[in-house]
Image 1 (cartoon, rainbow, N blue to C red):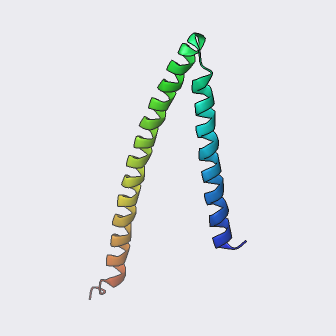
Image 2: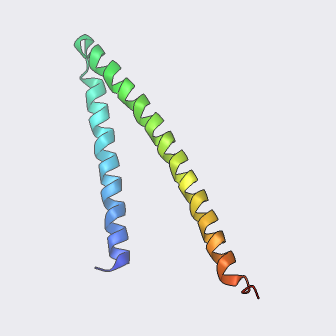
Image 3: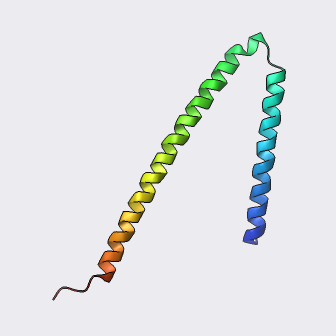
Length: 85
């Protein structure tokens, strides 16, 4: 499969998924009542937890990138350094 076509398809799927989520969110807001207060609280708690998990993932990715850079520098130093006599 052509990489350009695959990238286009992924973009289309992401956009359509985002639109579907927005529509579902609007529909839920319009059809929520007093009985849905508990559900709304649980959804809000889950959204907060997702935000925290995203933050943790971002930090872990940054640490991984840093470690990869250190390892690459170390490998480059060993490769470039002249042999000791």
